[in-house]
Image (cartoon, rainbow, N blue to C red; front, side, top):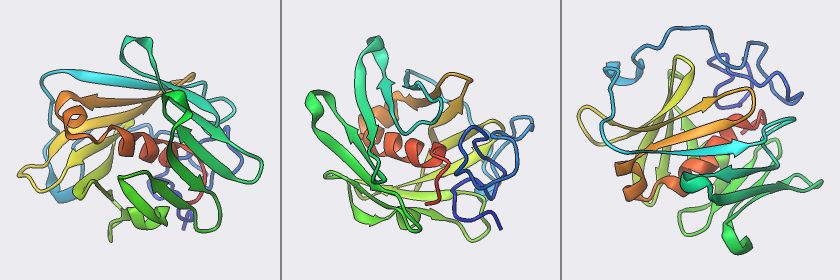
Length: 201
């Protein structure tokens, strides 16, 4: 109904981005609630949290800097006129490459082999969450209130590893210490970019 933008089906769009396909506000005006995926309880994460801010996000997130703990630059996101986005580590090492198109293609070095973005972030049959595989581990992204929450799969109940939130000036990826230790940062950064790009994946 809304194309293949990851959360357009849930009414999440980016009104500042003309390529956004949903006609709803960027975040639904819903109170935070437990996700429908597997009837999971809303969980609270204890321990350390690390925040990574994508800024600036105006006019879009496709050219920005990712600032992490200690106000250090962790990644730079650069998009060229030919529709290719590159995520660079410090010293300009390539972390990931996204080729935008009718079927966008993503590759994350040593983490995700080259494949369609819609295959990597596979939409569930009931369209309530997206599955993600990174470093041969399974995760789920679930819209919840004004966030997109990251869960580690294969645990009962699934463990909350972080969330994506948005303000008027930045998109933020919040990860728990466990998520950071598990090495999901790079994949989560790429997923955040895909979800917030306003592009079809």
